[in-house]
Length: 256
Image (tube, rainbow, N blue to C red):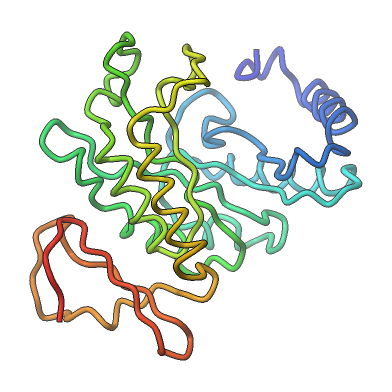
């Protein structure tokens, strides 16, 4: 009924949110209040962007902050990547603390392994955004032993998991990934899929080898005169002092 606005009217929506906040806001295991999964579905279930969804997020974000006593960040999770979030919420700075950003990169039969385009979407969609953001969704790694429920998952293998994670991290954001074992219709939490080992490698690198918070994306170090095939351009990060540089080569190779 959530998309039936003649049934789930604003008064019921408010009552529902009051219940959720009263029930869960005090829990330390609840860190973020995300107002809605792919909030652009508001108000009628149409996934495409519409300004009314921004107005809903602003109104609802203010409501949550007014009644939730424990100060959890208020977030939105997107479906469409455009327009940029700085433009969406320009009229109400400070209401939305965090964007749980979604973009999947390439996911076709011949290019899903590359997860290309993720860093470009992060850069363009979050340009001039003053709040925080997390790269919160870039696909669900396929388990071939399970029935394919969504065609868009078909070619999302462990290589998509790996490259998507590094592209997100080298865009200066934390990452969250999905696996078919624990997505929607399935619940197999005791079996890690192959891509988990790649996420653990990334975690180890940014916690034990270098300190993630000391680095920021730094595309200036890459030779801009070189023309790279889509998805093959190296990504770079550096410290503010410029005394350390990190380089990621999505398809391998060497650098000088």
